Length: 221
Ligand SMILES: N[C@@H](CCC(=O)N[C@@H](CS)C(=O)NCC(=O)O)C(=O)O
Image (cartoon, rainbow, N blue to C red):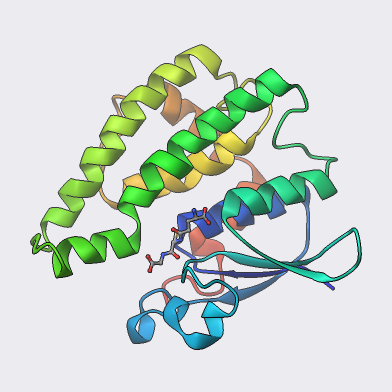
């Protein structure tokens, strides 16, 4: 059975998993979950069977230990599993210290930035906390610029061709979707030259192009 990815073209967490699958050359089926249509398909009873947290992505994939189907949420847990079962292209280095640095860079994006700019947080800001719709963009810019300023300093220390040295790692997998979002919301990236250089190198990779939001079947839906 091919793995089945339930995701949304513009979801950054789904984008991470698509990048990992593409880099590893894993074929999969893609099931779009529209995050806005009908109030959000992620909230449907059907999708909640896959993830009661009502968030994408979900990856259904064979458990290599017993052949049963695993139903995994949390993009980083999914990517760790893929790294363990398809180790030919490693996204997390085997060396413990290097792995810790790569996870640190990845979590700057996935744990500290993405959650405060997630759809449900933005929706709550307007519906529950009366923030005007127009302030959403400012909210996103605030957190993106703070996070990218610190990340630029990390890149000065750790980057080579990519975020960590000259191999694509989990750090790159997590950076790319956040930069895509930042561009969407008009964040000026000129204060971050290392980040721009790394992103240009990543965008040149065919696997990254395959995983891009605009290349998905549900793009612009
Ligand atoms: N930590 C989770 C985050 C998942 C997440 O926040 N997914 C977003 C899209 S990037 C979502 O489904 N949002 C729907 C909503 O907020 O209602 C992961 O890495 O998988």
